[in-house]
Length: 473
Image (cartoon, rainbow, N blue to C red; front, side, top):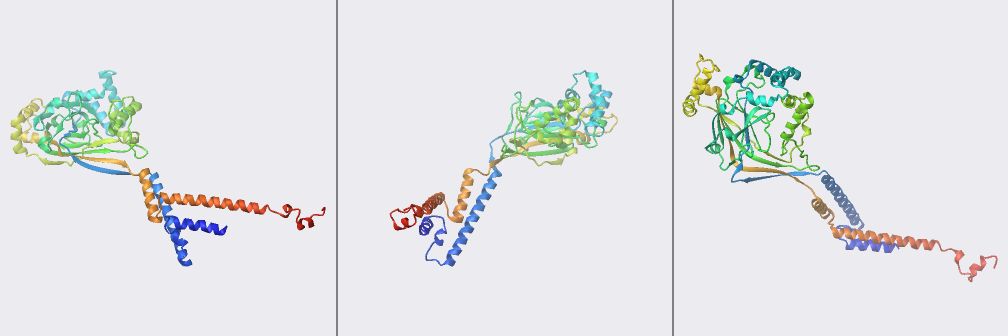
């Protein structure tokens, strides 16, 4: 039987495609050579198994890769541009008591006084305007008006007007959005790159209508606060604002980036059903969450939203997952000082700065006796702003699965082939060998049992030995 066993092993060794095994049974090799081949086969097999385990483990971690593509376009949808005056309220249209109570709310918003300090101010407005008082409506009424701020607007070299903007209330105050993507205002596409082919605005920030007690020492700015966002997303003035100061020409070249991410378990993105927004974005989700949190905190979803947003929202960002598809507009802002001496003559002839300055003095917004020239007015109040595509190109970043059954199978096959020269056929040979060895071992076991059960009690009775051992015979 030992010879049969050897024959079975040798047959497998000499016929299998499992590299190295044949050298172990090669009769032309010495014992030392065979020993070396045994060590090599065991080592190669161990390396192969360990690498296969590593491959399977890495696949279980669900790795991903980022694929970046860049492509040129003939035209690109222009983003929504939301502009706000850095001053939230125009004091010229507000009573003195309103201004005082607004100062209390602003101090609470910026943390100079406790949030509870704004309660008396809110109650004042509720008593004055009734239980249906909404700070949003009041902000819209008391804020700067676009018809007074917008001195000039051109889009793709053609004039645009206040009718191309919509008024919204955001965490930036009373703001105005160009290209909002509403049914009333068609979406605009930029077909030629460059600053003269984008949005060009000349704005009067009306610094002479600012009220100093409403100014925050943290943001003593005079100018325009603006955001650039995908038209289906709300503006975010908390973490993504830009600023254009007075007396400067601000250039804002943008490019379009589109990011796609995977959902769990591969990625971390997700989408929630929002109440007030049909298109999910993290900014929209955080806006609604801030409103709900304000309602739970002070039962003032509108008047308390800004306070809650600044004080509490940063601690609860995890409630809103990152959107699976996002659009962004990276930019590098540059600025140049307006040539107020020369530019004042040109601008005065186009939009009549002298008339605006004269009205401000007539209304005593600017002291009539103050020597205030057109050049100084431009330096303190005029913002020149260009927002445009610097290149009609989209950069797409897509998160993709970096593993799968076919990839794992090919990597394992590569390790099998590299280390031991094995393939699927080799595995079949090994299985056949093990099955054959099992039946050979089973046959040997049964034969041994039959031999062990043979004893003298079962000898032939006619034999002399049987008679000798039986006393009854």
